[in-house]
Image (tube, rainbow, N blue to C red; front, top):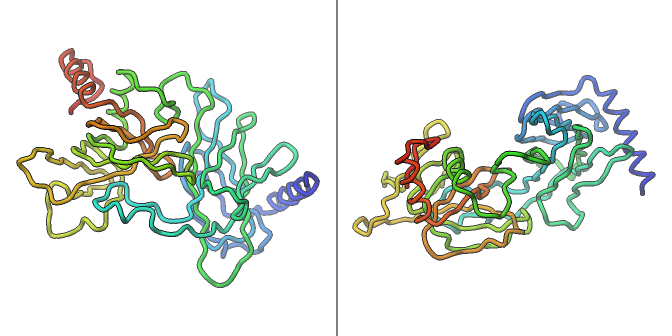
Length: 332
């Protein structure tokens, strides 16, 4: 088996060297089509120089060689890359009906992934490898990481697309980084930073938890009682009706705010919900009481950063607003 992989490695390396006319990229995202390839054995080089982004390959033919060169701190040469293959569309970030989420059956991913090693290619993902996880992670070697995406043979004239998201992070971080935070509770300083910089900031209740083997995470379902800030463009398509109330999202160039009145005097017809993911090893679950919830978008899904109980957050806001040293305008 090792000899076969080594032979594949040298074959692909020679094809890549010959594919000087291939379409290249030097950005965060890459979109391309196999229909522009002159041969089914060609290798297209793609240069990805961001910490996160996406690759979308329509009608895949031949192979892609993805070279990761993300910006890293001066003292961090090597990095870790996580790739998530997309086998079905992601549900909206925020929604009113829980039933609409994750109801689409996953499709077969039309490509195989190989990590470029020092002497051979290492299999990373195959549609029939028996591993249900959509997520695959690997480390760089001497600040270098390359991934081969090999198209599967055509199985008919139907439309095929190989799409995945990637995220690169330093192996060791000397400073707080929400992307590398572990399962421990956030300190006051980390909590303030999470409030000021997260993609999702909300008060809410954790109403259920569900293990997600495909994402190696626990999926928390939140009922939001006050959504302070959210960034993104995904909204519940079922929410665009005649009732233009405070629970309905208002989009504005990818940034929007919700103000949800939690008082008993106002009768709310619908509740706003969100899914937030936590690393499966943390053992997170539903809990009683109201929380301040902060999350950032990672690989297409919200990932939890900090979730203190509301009374702790209220006390911190009062202290920081009183001394006037807050990093941004804090509220609860």
